[in-house]
Length: 379
Image 1 (cartoon, rainbow, N blue to C red):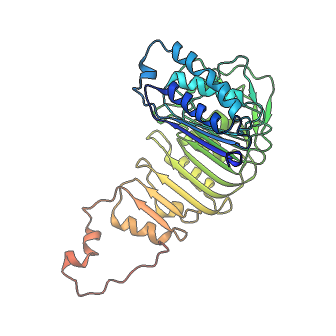
Image 2 (tube, rainbow, N blue to C red; image 1 turned 45 degrees about the vertical axis):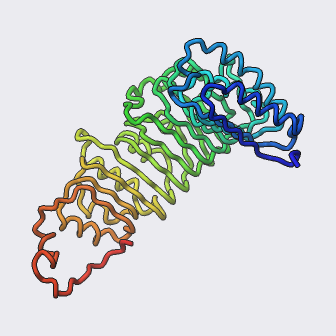
Image 3 (cartoon, helix red, strand yellow; image 1 turned 180 degrees about the vertical axis):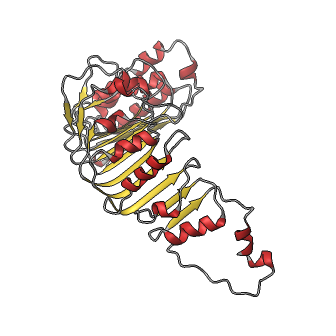
């Protein structure tokens, strides 16, 4: 029965007896089978929290020494793991390093590696995971550590979260002028919300070109005013989906990155009063041109940009959120003039509005009168 198992889930919730729990689990598995030959997926979750004893104890070497043998034990029990999902124990340096050692044990065969927090690879020089097709990794708070290094030729899905500025700015000199990701179809880059990400553009002028000929989906979240990956990227002329949350500068780079057609464009513009309103409007018109966005266009704007319905009338915008202050007449104008809209949200509508009052039969005592609806495609 056990020799047919393909996926193993191990969850350890004990804060103080992690090593004991790990020993008991491995012992019970060995009683069933000395080796689980068909297991290809391992999901391992530790339930430590930020205040756990494992993190608080200053003498962490004994924990590292106690846990280290179980890398080999698990590797021998589950020799064919190609998908590794590691969860829990955020900001726990001991476990981040142990997870890194476990991943290294499978480095020659892993195709999928997912860690919901940082994973520390403490084996110089960097050991490449040559078989990885899917990599999901989050950077943590600890300085001067290395994380998983994948081969560009194999990657198909890449998600990197909480990217600190220091990571890109401290990259060693790259000898090649171009790096090709021939199979990469999905790319997600998430930066810290509060940081002014990559303000120094000159620091990244020597980075190589990144060719992504098969990329279908791109997410860049909280990219500030500049993103070196996007600035260096050579994107395909046609894509399925692009989602950008960032300031004017990064949106301007997107406009020039070579994408001529995209089925689905989602953009949240984090603008500021220093942005030129005319330039921003022209940028929106270029990005959401009906010849560029073919099916779905979602635009979210904060209150710093003043727009009129005429500015968006001819564009492929199906979903719209506007933060600028407006009265009900302007609301009605947006709803009626944007023929492609199926969803719209206004977050700053004035309630002291004579037009709004006149249109409400309950306010004016005209409850018996018929209110004629206006034509709009809104669902």
